[in-house]
Image (cartoon, rainbow, N blue to C red):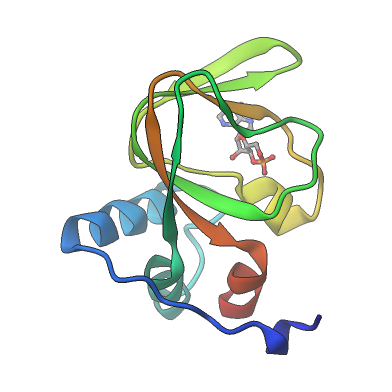
Amino acid sequence: QTANDIQIQRYDKDFRSKQLIKAAIMDNDFLKNLDTLQVKEMVESMHQAEYKADSYVITEGEAGNDLFVSAEGEFQVIKDGKILAVMGPGKAFGELAILYNCTRTASIRALTPCKVWMLDRRVFQKSA
Ligand code: CMP
């Protein structure tokens, strides 16, 4: 499947959600240099997913297919069994495997019931 076969599906969302996603992208060192139009497309194309407390959003070492923005809840960043960080809402993560085509550099674990916005890498690659 080539990038041109990917239909960019847009998902309606409220103003507050759009602002949260945009701010998270602009706050991420690896994503902040994307141009305004690319960011707008990403905001429009993200869809929501939920994770139970104690579940893994990302597993270290696996192939990565999505970029995430945290919307609700608390998340741990874990690498080699060590907790590197705890994040709340409004953080973009999972960008490294998408941008650099590497495996996931850390695990992301939901500490509480969590909501995220997510974007398929093919949509990201088409818009970015
Ligand atoms: P990725 O490697 O795709 O998947 C795991 C994600 O965890 C990674 O992208 C980053 O978004 C995030 N991450 C990796 N290392 C750290 C760190 N030291 N602190 C915070 N987040 C990190």
